[in-house]
Length: 413
Image 1: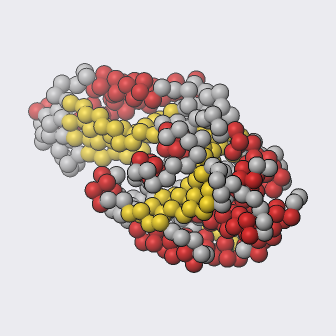
Image 2 (image 1 turned 120 degrees about the vertical axis):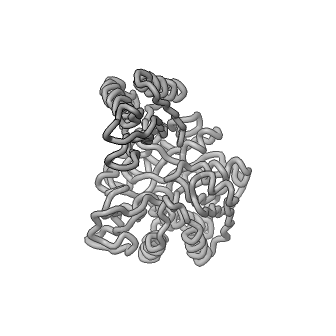
Image 3 (image 1 turned 180 degrees about the horizontal axis):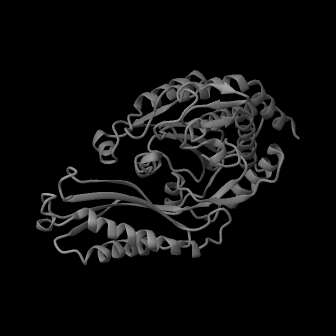
């Protein structure tokens, strides 16, 4: 190991306690989405970054744009550190989180540390990588001061709408021309380098009929009866998804889940409207347009036999799958190599059955992979569940991996 690499590691070793406090401060500020009022968290993150000596660009998203995304307020943060002529590498993590929900044994905003794990909503997904990427960049600055010949720029992109689709986070930064990176790394976990992930389609289905008194139900058109037929058809159809398996390790099969449903007026009234939302996960090999057309056809045909019933299908979210782009090999190779050396086990490139903000970078032609702080899988982290948690040792190690991989890329090692 070179003297410069030793400088990177010794810098990070000395910064472990400050890095832990940095992450804790981020966990303590709620940024639940919904409702999506994330401006306060962005300001706190900016203050912490400025306290470390970084110049922080605050990019508030216009109110109308935020509201169109179903949120209240969002400010995207950008930090740029130019070391010399060379590639621009963006590091993206999101600060918005799903609401805590029930069942916690720890304070979801307490950042409590127990047995080497920090607990709190967003501590693993993905406030952790605010800390990973920030302190990796600090280590690179220390390397530059120690004489490292680095060629290129590192940018931190901290955004606030991943849980709502990422349209006003990374996509907005790119569409506005605020950043034009050559490569990007998105938030991930420490024991695999993600090069592909599923796409996602959310549809809202509204089945409308005509209300009637329960004593004379035949005078109305029962929306729930029709909706039941639609749901039965959907549940029967989704059994066939298991026969489709992605060729990419870690992806698995497509999935379909009905996650929300509401309707009816009262117990003694024939329901005049039922609305439900479904989540369709698409493997990279699927054609998203064909997937949506198939679902719409199934929904409409299963409601067609019911007189007086109309069905409206509205797209809520569309997330294309993440697929490897030419040029991502350099990121993947260096991250896998460094992670294998640091994490104590072989770390390989894989896919995951999730969807992330990273797709917006690849849609813009920017080679992208996912890597960051976290345990072996989302179940171990309790991601999106009660008692979300992060092993602090994985935070420290992942930061080493990112810093060393960036050093490799910017120094031509």
